[in-house]
Image (cartoon, rainbow, N blue to C red):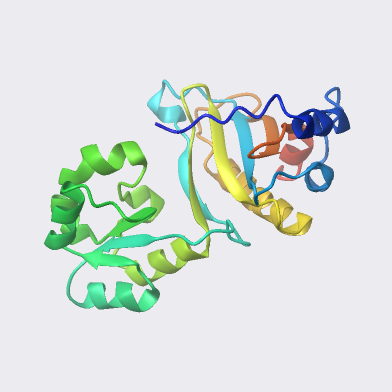
Length: 240
């Protein structure tokens, strides 16, 4: 279960809150610039991006899920495991995979060894990897063809994961929460990552979604208050 961070109750948080005009919605670049100006924590906080979508996830045809390679990475090293054998095992190692194996790796994971942040598998091994669903599924680590992590092009999958590929999935309330970098990033890089994520969300819009799709957008740091972004203004950038 994820740890819930209580951001409130500190002088730094209160000072940051007073800098934000809660009665208005900011342009994306303006919100990111403001975020960079707020008092910082003693560690390099993650920048979190939250989007409320106009979908009802209870209906299968309104589920929003996908992945995107952020152009400026996420500011952390990603440990990649690849379930492959033979030539594909060699390809994965050459691409920089941290853990590679076939039946032996399946057994390690079944034994509780999960020393990776994302997993890739070749289609021919999914019969065996499928047995790990109850272990990897709840952790969000199960390879999925829709996310490009079940593929014979393991070299590309590994390189994308290392470069800052992030997955997104709408929750039961219609929200998507994704890390888009670190507070130490330049404002331009944070904004660039945010736009890449929004573009991916727009492309993933279900045909069954009616009305306003990007309903609200908020950006924040791990220990900081949320800054509301003008969702309509962002949506207008993607109108044909």
